[in-house]
Structure formats: C-alpha cells, structure tokens
Length: 290
Image (cartoon, rainbow, N blue to C red; front, side):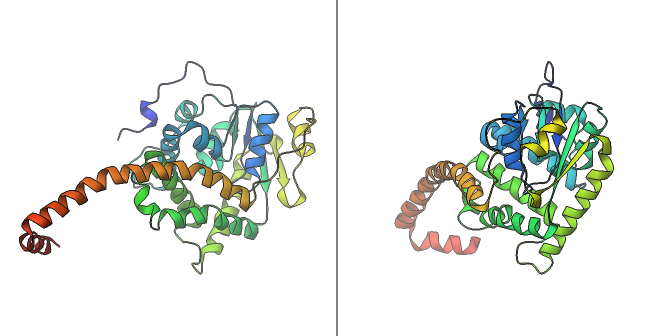
C-alpha cells in the first residue's frame, strides 16, 4: 500500500535531533514548544504541524497514527527513515513522540546525543484536561454541521481526523461521558509514562512535575543553556486552546461552506427543475429508490 510519506522525497540532509520532549499532550507541551523556540531550537509540535505545515504534515501524522494503532489497516508503520523525512527540518520534537510511542522514542533513545524531557502530572487532571480540549473537538467532528463540512475542505478534514484518531488511541474507544472514559484515559496515561521511562535512558532523561510549575530553571541547566531574560511562556489553558482552535477552524469552515454550496446548489436546482417539469412521476421514482 502506497503511503503519503513514500511520496515525500528524502532530505539531502536531516537536521540532527538534539532534544525530545516526550511529554504527552496536555502536560505543558505548548508552552514547552514556545520555550524551545525561544532557546533557539527548530521545534516540531502538533501546533507547528497544523498551523504552519498544513495538509501534507497532517496526512503524515494521521498515516503514522493509523499505522501505530490499527494493526489491521495494512499501513506499514513508520521507521527511522520515515520519521526523518517527515521532520527533517527540526532538531527538537515536542509532544509528537508521545503519539508514536515506542517506535519513535526508541529511534532517538539509541542516539547518545539526544536529551529527553518528560513532564508528568496527575493522571486524573490530565484526563479531565484531554476531555476539555481534544474531547470537545471530537464531539464537534462527529456532530452537525462539522460532520458534513469536514468533507469539503481537505485540511479541515485531516485536522478533525487527527483529533478523532488521537482521542480513540488515548481513550481506548470510549467517549466523554462514558462511565469508563476517565478510567481508560488514566490507564493510557500511566501505561505511556511507564513505557517512556523504560525506553529512555535514565542518564539522558529529565523529569518535571507539572503541578510544581515549569520555568526556565527546570530545563536550561539540563540542556546546558543560559536562562533567557524573558518570562517562561504561558501555559495552554482551556481558553487559549479554544482561541487557537477557533482561529484555525473559522476560515476553513467558511471555505468548506462555499465548496458545499458550489456542489449543492446546482444539484438542488436540478431537482427543483425536474420536480416542476415531471411532478408526480419524479416523486414516484424517488420513492422507489428510497
């Protein structure tokens, strides 16, 4: 089966990865993404994928997720060469490795020059945060009008698909409100943290507890870098998450509505004309088809 990543040319030279922030989403990863950019890294995070790289990178992301979590999909799982093609321009990876699990963490765990940061938090608080963010996007993706509009804009469709795939993997098939939803999310979180600590060499792993707060002093000494003069980036609270998502969605929803109208109006016009001309004969034919 041909994959999107197979159509991507191999880079002349991939930028060596220096830091992997293995923290799962909703563990201060957006502020960490911004912090790493301030420190001078070229950083890859889901926000970079969506907001700056767009459709091709969303397709890579979704394809890798499907290969990772659906063994019956027939999609070959990504290997080191695939990951390097996808993220060749970046030397710091944030959040994305958590979605790819052991396959991606293992690739960089073998490189003695790569340092790892892992931010931990209360599993229960993490589960609630996931439901307040990705859970809301999944509800939107599966409800009217988004369940229609996502089919009329490729980037919008891939973004909604990403959130559904992520949530399915994290919540193990449950949805917000399901009696076992938060329990499954907590299990998923605990399993991931346990696996990450097993795969990542302890002497290259720096663990931070989110509830204690995160600041420059938590990461700069470990990375051997001076503390910047500016404040550490603000966390991605629910209001900020909503603003980011709304800013991404609104122009694409407008584009999808326009495309829907272009497709639907001629069809509705043809049906209206046929109804006027053929009347009961057309209605009788339609009834037989339903």
